[in-house]
Image (tube, rainbow, N blue to C red; front, side, top):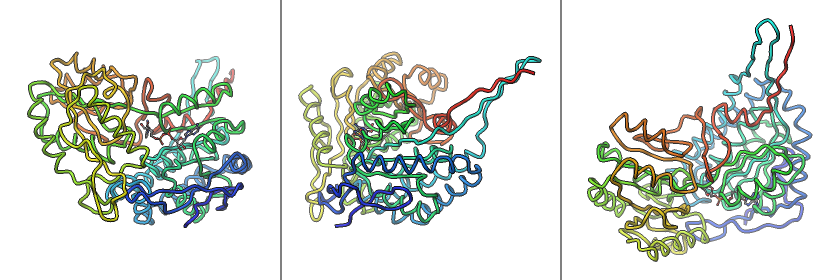
Length: 480
Ligand code: NAD
C-alpha cells in the first residue's frame, strides 16, 4: 500500500519512528494508503528546519516570495484533476464538488495571498509638529497551522498561504482523516521551487503530532481550524506560553426564512446550505427557522426535493451526496438522529444509513435527513452534528426568530431570507455570528473577515486580517 511521507526541510521523508496507520476511503470503507504516525521527533525536525529557513525567507523581497507562491497556485491549477480525484477519494465528497469548489479555492488561496502581500501596508500616526509614529509589521517566526478534514486542501492552504506570504515559515499538519492532498501539495512545493524548510508538513494524529506542534516552544503562533473541544484544549495549552492564537471552531448555524423571500431562490440555496458536502461544512445551516405563514409550503417543497437527492458514488456526476468522512463520524451523526427522536422530533425524510450497494456496500453513506417538532432548546438544536441533518422550526415574529437563532453557544454564520431591505439590515445587525448571508449562502469574497464569535472561535482569517495575524506590529515613534 502507498505510504504517504512527511515533507521536512524540502524533502519527502518517512516518520522517524517508522510507524504508520491506515487511511480509509469513506466510500468503500477500505484502507488504501498509510499515513505517517509522526511523533515529537518529526515535529522537532520540522520546527528546526522552519526555524533555520526563517531568516532567509523573511528577508527575501516580497516580490520573490510572491512569485514562489504564485508558482504553487499555478501548479495546483495544472494538477486540478489529480487533486480533485484525490480529495474525493480521501474525503468521500462528490468529485464535482472537489472540482468546482475545493481545488479551485485552494489555488485561489495561494494566488490571493501571493498578491495580497504586495498591497499590504502598515499604518502611520502623525502627532502634528511633535512626532511621527509608524508601525512596522514584521513576520514572527515559525507558524503552526492545523486543519480539519471537511475541506482538506481548501482549509489547509487558507492558513499556509497567508502565513508564508507574510514571511513566516510553517510547520503544518493536515487532518489524519484526510491527509492525501496535503501530501500532493508537498510534491507541488518541491516542483515550485519552494526553498527548503519554508513549508514543512507533518502527518499524524491530533493528540500526538498535533499536540506537539501546539506545545513546541519554537512555534509562537498557532492557526487552528477544527472542533470547539480541541480549540479549548489548544487555548488552555498555548495560553501559558503566550502564543498568538487564531481559532476557527464549530458552528450550529441558523437559516432564517421570512415569508416575503424569493421562495424559489431560497429553496434552491437552502438545499445546498443544508446538504453540500454531506452537511460537513462549518458554514452549513443546520437549524432552519421558517416564518409560520409559509412553514407548510416550505416543508412540503423542501422534503420533496430532499427525497430526490441522490446519495451515491462520489465520482458519479449525478450524486448530490457522497459518503460522510469516517465510520465514527457516521455513527456520531446517527446517534444524533436517535437523540432527536428521543427528544420528540419527527423524521420527515432520511434518518438512516443509505444503502448504496455494489463496491460501496461498506461505505459510510447517510440519507439526507429533515426533522421537525423539536424545541430550539433541545440538544439536537444546540449541539453541532456536522452531517446531513437539518431541523425545521416555525417562528411568529422577527424577535422570536432572533431569540432562537442566537440561543446556542456557537456564533459562526447565519443566513437570512427576506425581500424587506430594512428587516435584512436589522436582523443582520442583531445576529450573534461572525458572518451573515442575506439572500445567499457561501458567497465568499476572500478580502472579507472570516471567523466566529462565542464558542465558534477567536480571531479572524481572510483578507488583510490574516496578514495582520501572521505579523507582529511594532510602533516606532520619532520625535521631530
Ligand atoms: P478536530 O478538532 O478533531 O481536528 C482538527 C485538527 O486538529 C486535525 O488536524 C486534528 O488532527 C487536530 N487535532 C486534534 N486534537 C489535537 C490536539 N490535541 N492538538 C493539536 N491538534 C489536534 O476537528 P475535525 O473533526 O477534524 O473537524 C470538524 C470540526 O471543524 C467541526 O467542529 C467543524 O465545525 C470545524 N470547522 C470549523 C471551521 C471554521 O472555519 N470555523 C471550518 C471547518 C471545520
